[in-house]
Image (cartoon, rainbow, N blue to C red; front, side):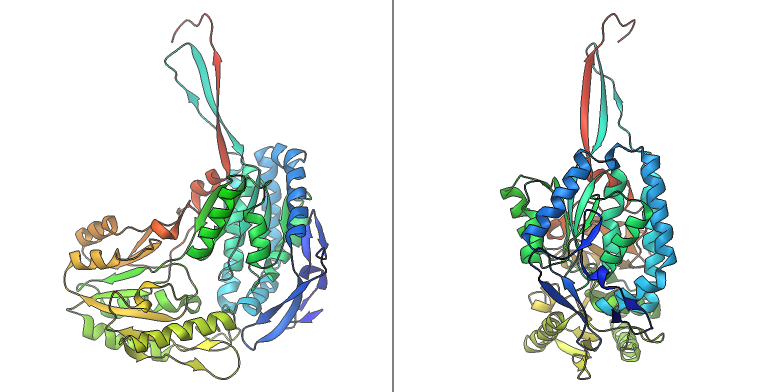
Length: 494
């Protein structure tokens, strides 16, 4: 048993692989340590999945799909089980929130809201499970034609570490509702909540083999999932570089379908007519929420020259008042970065920004000598060719610039390989409409930021990937369209 900071403990069986309805050791007997980023201390040793373990998980998922009850249940039966799972999650909110705070350095207060939200996402797709149907088609000839929507089969889900709960259910909920079976590879930094969710899924009545969870490293377990000949689709959220590797593995193996939600370098564009205090607060949250470890973080902020000076002053004031510390403390606004590697990567980018000549307005340093805490960091006078303007840093580092015209702002916003999200702050509806249609990104927020709802499709343009999460679009990612045509003889009409 491992002791958690607020009195909970970890049952050792929730640190093993979950395959075919059972918690099991890895075939190799290998384990890896999951680390508390507040201190750098070990939380627990977790079973490490190898290729052989992924093979066993895929075999279980394949049997459950080809011969088991899950795809053959009515949608309403699947929906009832998913509803029960959601109720069990609600009953364990505090415990799961503790796991994600310990494992990822996320704010406990946020995690306590996030866990009920993922239960509601499960309910959303549970409600969709009995509404999956094709269409009757009107043909030119004497034929009756219709489409069937069939589950795609065995799905491999590879999940990142920044939102372990939300992204687990972003993938698992629609694919389960569709009737698929699956193998889930959580990030090695944050495996604990995924294993706990698997335990609750078993209690809810999800049949053995339908949901398998194999913690491990991307190069081994993730690669085995991406290249597996018996997986029909892989869904990946993470970096663009790893997304390319997933796609290559899918192509070289069985040409399985792929959906990718990848990196971002999202612009927030603030126009002269904006309320400066509101815009500064939005910009700050846009980069500091979840310590900047967000794919849609507003890391490039463009402010029109008429309000730039006032905006910069307010922004720096707010950043200096931002509270960084232990994520279990209720007054804290920013916890530690997820691990030492990410911590060092962010600090390296900050040094790049200094060397390349950007103006460091505030922050730029690590905090304390224990744990992976970094000051909120704002650079001004950032040029388009600087690394901090081009690369996804995935930390609390903002690149701030000024612009003159709307046309310039659009051009600079689009000057990126990414296209995940963008924000616009203006009171002018014409500017909002023009910019939202001109910026090449999959999600545009006008006078708001980070608004995600279960029924709002989300996904990227360009190197930010393809395929939508949320809404009915996500459900359809896990369905095949089959057309059926039969002749009609002696019909009284065409």
